Length: 480
Image 1 (tube, one colour):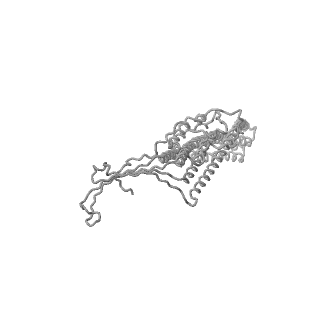
Image 2 (spheres, helix red, strand yellow):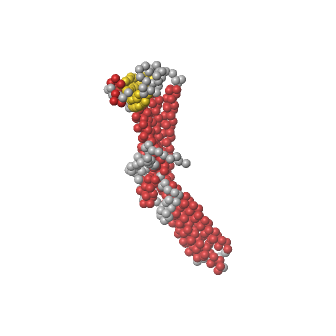
Image 3 (cartoon, one colour):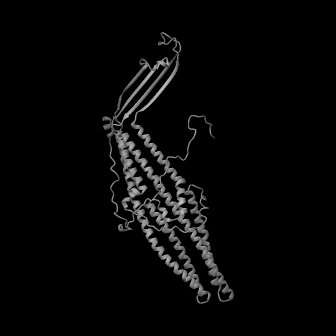
């Protein structure tokens, strides 16, 4: 019962959970009455792109940053085990056999100077009682550090999945812009041929021909720029999947539409970010860890009580080691009292308190940034959808205007300037529409990241990246 009371004693502040901060009741960009409910698990399935789903699954398995985060979790869990060992006694044993001979001139060699063998064995133990909870506070800090590492792993998955989706959407957008530029340049070359025919027939002029040629060449000049950007996106996807830069080039060789999300995301309430955003949860766990470290530092200012004991035996023959007459032992408590350290231990407490304040400020800042991310993503997504609708309408009308102006030009009822302007406006509107679709999809991805959407399946962190072999005693060759 006394042991239970002793282990239950602790000094330092007790962490009472996440601090209370002023949080908005609802998102300003989306009224609470329209709040979507549900789960963010596997949100990328809402983009309805099978190849994207496959790339994300492969990235989770092979991405180096995720592998590093897994190793950090293993380290943190091992630290908990290492720290917990401080609650238990430590026991060590030793044994020796020595051949001895006392010289004839020695004062101790009164009777016999013949050689003899001395057999010795001993066990030593020590146990520092955790009277003021210093070890318990250290364990508490280690556990919260492990929890923070697990949230950091989840945060790396949030970032990874969002990045894979964003670069994939960007790549599909450049493929669409390349295809548009190529289609448009073909049409513009047709216009150039028509203008050349009119010029050669004497019904056109050299200025119109030069402008038609220049416009087609200008459109074609966009293609290499888009191809460069497309290659960069594909290379980044390869790296995110833990492959060489061209590791997914063959998968992306065939064009596909820009993924278009068709289902709204469940935004929840601002307070939900305390649990759903892993970076916020990690910062909160680091705050809890820093609070526990204050108690560990405070406990070091109090007396330390240890129980030590040893049992030893020595005999000239191994068979006599177990005889009572050969056994010696000692046991007893020891007390260490800090008398004077020039304020070193108190300064350690003050350092821990300052680090706790830093952790609180980091938590507060992380939470505010999370609010900002969600609000920005909501506004961007909402406004981009409105913009895309207007661009769709504009492209439709410009398409009709281009068709009519070209038809009138062929019959001589419209000027070449009308055709040139209509084709230029149509290309610009259709290119802007593609960019808007890409932006809307990326805003959707940004909102999912801001809300903490991540991988929901279990993640194996127990398997190390490098598995060592032949770690027991062995002879080794020196490596150059």
